[in-house]
Image 1 (cartoon, helix red, strand yellow):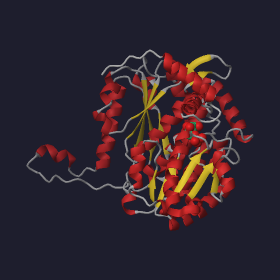
Image 2: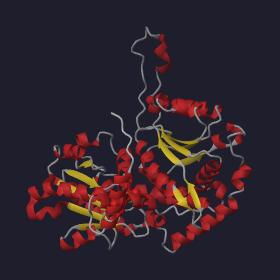
Image 3: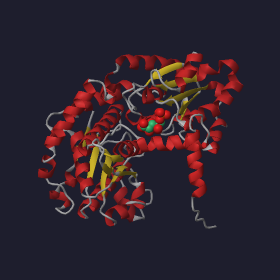
Image 4: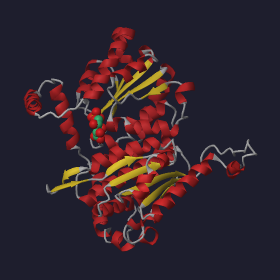
Length: 460
Ligand code: PA5
């Protein structure tokens, strides 16, 4: 495993004193960082913080592998029904580690409809036969409206195809005891994988939430967890100046204090692009909090933005280089791409193409990354690089663990609870009320009244 954090370009020596950090500033956080590390270790030990243990779950892994081997033989398609933390990690695993056009030539074909756009969902049904499809419903709470509705939508087709045997094509991943999926599973013999109660949605990618679909599509989940285990050790280093989780958190914490409230993640790799999507949720939901742990109003957080190199050099980089200096940019860089065919100049009369002769696309992509990094640094825009020696299951596992640990560290430094999401719950409750769910009648009345009183400003 080799995932390295290069933070040279946040240091004053490279990015200048106005927008750089000094070693002394980072070192001033070591005392607090030490307390946070002790607290995280204790929470991992007493099992209040479950994601630390996920890379070590041997029993679940062998159960997942056995199930996946059977599923690969039985099903032509796999449909993953979940949203947020129950979808973004699984999607990032597929896009980073499978052939980019996997579904064109391999089975089971993998689909991740993580939104309730009826046209989008319906389009999928034109291409799959429900009776030859495994529907994996993933919901920690077992109640999320989008997940429940998508499951019910597909159920019609499952029932039409399989009648009373519909449950044979269902798989649930949910809490060990609570929630509506468990109520269904008590009535029908549906296979269930469990999300440990002490693992929150956005920290669950290395649980069955992400591992089941990964194993079904043929990803090496042993390698994934091996990488995560190695990174877990690195993120547990006592010497915090050599602990990348602490450093990532400390750097972002210091910049938040300097009003750099945007964290851009910019992979220079299409395969890694959905890692930025996963990070967007992790960083936003974990750190975007109104109150700190003492109950004081803090309204803290950093807005995560995803960009893709080199594509977004032609869309976003102008803003990053010359616009407001309010961002910290993290590049994801791949040392060695799997394919490295050299280019030739098939138009020798065009001398201007000759600089590309004998170069690979990977060389060009990495030169573009270097160029963007230089442009940012020369314009005093702090940036970091997470460098993968290559795109591999081990490195992806390490990346997930590193950013989860960094998020936990950042929550500790900010003195907020990084593991709840009261803002998301508000939206969930309002949705239930608007859709007329039992038990939400008072909330519904309240909302309808509010909507009635709303002053409308519309133009057409
Ligand atoms: O991180 C979280 O907790 C959320 O994003 C959840 O994953 C998301 O809301 C889906 O919840 P559930 O898995 O309970 O359906």
